[in-house]
Image (cartoon, rainbow, N blue to C red; front, side, top):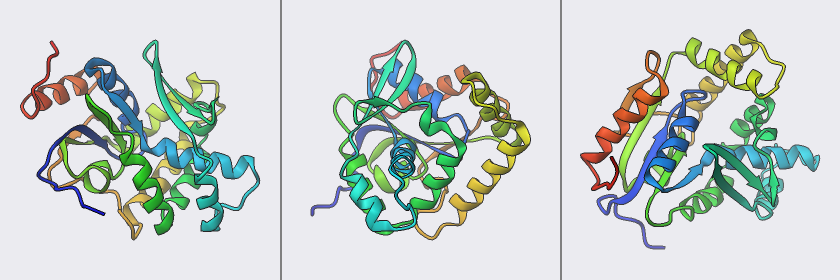
Length: 234
């Protein structure tokens, strides 16, 4: 298989970062503003985790997950400024937000053969005119040829506050303390895993959003992107 030259740039903006750093809302808005496609890579692993629970399949056995991956028909749709995750023609947007699903997703992401299979799936989401790819290793592993790479971060406390409010707004019965420790554990798992640990790509612009609102982050990224890509936006 021919490897993509890192120097051959694509109209791809990668948004990487830890849990609840704002990747989702930033990516969704950028996709809307640019008129580009969107990839939420975490939703792939979360959808797989959801399928394993739904079908009562052990997620600790890699062969089970590889089998489920063949049944994974995933689409991302933005309607009225909301991102919907469609799995096998079913809206699972809320289902996969469950933090338990997130923990399983983190655990299954360590399997080498599964990661390789999903890597090919992720790459296939690129279509002209461009792609906003959100995840944890989009810039370093999946799209090393991306024209723009962003690493979005924020303090653990702020991320826990944001995630708690997000889930409560969607009707989940959660509290700050539980979310704080779950995000902390997820961070530790992502940073210390042997395969593709969470870290900024060497070419990434690092943005700390602790003291920034959504619009401020978006404007920073747009300004930076205009220096890298010829964009026809205001």
